[in-house]
Each structure stands twice: as structure tokens, then as C-alpha cells.
Image (tube, rainbow, N blue to C red; front, side):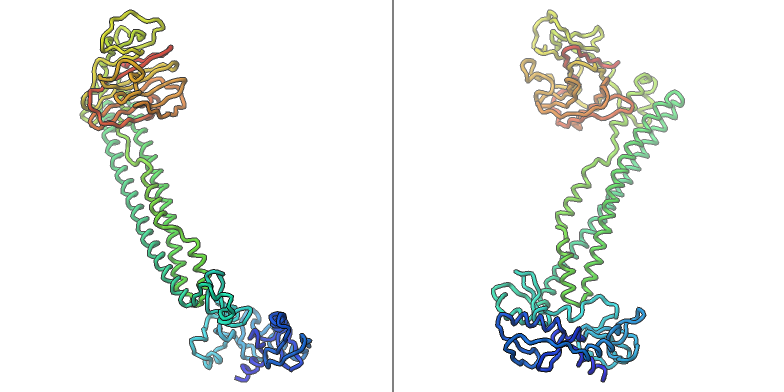
Length: 531
């Protein structure tokens, strides 16, 4: 091990590394030029300079003499010694190009097979691969005192050596040993890992549940599709266009739901993969032996760690923000609108194939409730606004404003009717209880808790109930409405009759009285019940 002894003699006692630009003091001791100059800087305030090796005291800052021979020796023995032709060479094989197989972090040396056999097996001598990125011992030393870093100051967020701890600057600070800090961070990482694992399981469950919803939608869509195809097969070529409209509506709803669910599944899969990467990163940290490197990686990891509980809660809330069920009512309305001309011949076929919704074709308006400014057609199907009042008798059922109710009401079951409306003027179409007030502002449809209506005013459409309004966006003129009532379910829905039919608004309530179709007209507006 003579070569090791030579290396030891050629090491600076301050940085413990091979001399770099060696200089000599008058006492005969050698140091790296930068090392000794930095050391003298620390003694500047005391104005007393000493040799770090023999403690010789100098009255003034000593002059540094460059050691040319020592410099030549270091350059000859160790210049380009570590690597040759891309290979890392043994530190102790002076004069021989022997490839290194291991690196000792404590000795800061590369070892060949022979020197590895006789190298110290102490735990302090940590052996790594030659190309390992683990920090050397010198990288873990205090730059001021050249001692190994063993402590961490929370207030100053710095690593400390024993001398740093004794100089008094950190006396009142909270200081912990690196070993204890590593243990604390390890426990913290384990807790986070547990949360990540639980979160990933929950994400997997969400994906599974959403896939189940897609399956249900498929089954429901297929069931409706089969009933629709069977119905259209019975009426064959006469209703080819009707069949196409209904199937298109079913496919549109199914595709919309599949697209939304597919996007959600994709988001969750990405999230799941991201969580898996975090798991791998944390598991890699468990294998890091070096405290400084470990704590630096921990700081990056923990600083970016999200609040997983709030994160999961937010993601769960987002999964329920869309409707993943087919709109049977919209499908039935689409079907019914097209079947009006064939209603008498197709009624039995529809019931046979499972489409039970029937149009209320015999509904007419009640002239006893019509205001004097409401003009009713001879068949009592149409109401328009009169600029001059007609002479009428005063009865309790009559409205003081230009409104009218239908003659027939609905106290149970499912019902559907269609209403044509003017594209100009001010009108309201809806339903009301017979006990609604007949005078005052509270008698207007939608301005009380006994009526629900769709309001068109200045080409702006809105839903109105109990004086609470909600705007409804439409992109083309509204010429006809479909009204669906499910009394027991407490559902009153309005649809725009166009190609395709579109849902406008649905009121939900617990109905307690008979509901009568109700209409308000003003200006040059009109409404008409379809026959």
C-alpha cells in the first residue's frame, strides 16, 4: 500500500484532496493555494495568523511560495489519472492504468479489484459504483470548518457541522441531527405514500364505476333501440323518416354520454399514472443512503406534494357534474311529434312496442277564464291579444290580466301537448292551479307559487316560477313548444319543436292540485294548441 501512503503525503490537510496549485509557508508545510488563502481570511479579524498544521504564529500575513517540484509531482502522478479513454482508473495504482471497479465516498478514492480486497470494510467507508452520482465526502463537509455536516438548523434552513453548532450563532435556534431529521422525513413520506396508495385505489374505483355506468347506458340504449326498430318495422316505409329521427336522438344522447365518460376516464387514468410515478419516486428515495441528497430530494418531493384529501374530494365532486342517463322523455317527445298525423292508426302499435306517451289533442281553452282582451278562436284552440276590450260578464274565474286557462286539467299520470307560438310579442305558456289568484300582479303566470311558465319577452326566453326567473338561450326562432307533465314524478318539461327537438327547461315540484295549461298574450302575440 505504498501508493496509498504516497497519495496521503500529496493531500492538502485542509481540503483532504490532492494538492491543487500547492504553496509553502515559511514553516515548511504545504497547502492548496485557495485553501490556505481562505483559511487566512477567517483569521483576518484576529490579526493573528497561524499555520493550520503546526500552529506556528506569524506576526503578519505570511507570504506564499509556490512549490514547483511538488506541483510537478502532483501533475505527473495524478493529472488525467482518474479517467483515461473514458475509463475510470484506480487511485492507488500509481504508474499503472488499472481500471477501478468501486468508489469509496469516505476516502474519495477509486478502487481496483486488488485494492478493494484490502480496503476497510467499516460502515464509514461507503462503497458505490464508479459512475454513481452520490455525493463525495468532501461535498458533505462544511465549507468553513471542513468538518462533516451532522446537523440541520430549521430557522436558517442550513446544514451544520459540530463547529458551526459550537460557535453560538445557532444557540437559540431549533437544531436537529441529520439522522433524526431523516427518520422524521421518512415517517412523513410513509404517511404520504399511504395517502397516495389509498387515492390510487379510489381513482381505480371511480374508473370501474364509470365503466359500469357506460355499460348501463349501452344496455338502456340498446333496449330503446330495439323497441324503436320493432315499431318502425311494423309501419315500414310509411315512417322511415320517423324511425331515423328517433334513432338519431338515441344515438346522440348515447354518444354525448360516452364522450363525457370517456373524457373523465382518460383524466382519471392520467391521474392514476401520475400517482404511480409519485409512488415510484418515493420508493426510490427509501434506497438513498446519503442524508444530504436524501433530504434535498425529500424537500422537492414534499414541497410539491398536494393536499390529497381535498384533491380526491374535488375529483369525486367533478365525476357527478354530468347526466349519464338517457333522456327517455326527449326520445318519446321526438317520437310523438312525428306521429301526430298517424296517431289514430299507430296508437296500438306504440303501446305494443313500449311507447306509452300520448298527445292531448282534445285540449281547448276555457272562455270563462279568458280576460276581456283575450280573443279565442272558434275552436277554442287559439288565443290572441285584443287592443280593445270586449264586453264580458264579471265572474270569479275570469282573470283581470290577459290570461286564460284550458278547460281540462291533469291530476295524475303522464301527459303531452304541443303549442304553436308567435315569433313576436309578449307571451307566457305554462301550467297553473285553479286556485291561483285572478287579480293583481301575483295572478300572472310564474309570479306566484301556484304556476310555472316559459316567458318570451323582447326575443328573450326565460323560465319563471314564484317570481324567480332563469334565462334560456335559443339560437333560432321559437315557433312551437312541446310540454310534458309527469304528475306523480313532479316533472314539468318544455321542449323546442325543431329538427332535432331540444330540451329547454324542466321544473321540479310536488304537485298538490290539478294542473291546467295556462296562457298569457300581450301586444301582437298569439298561442295555439295543436290538434
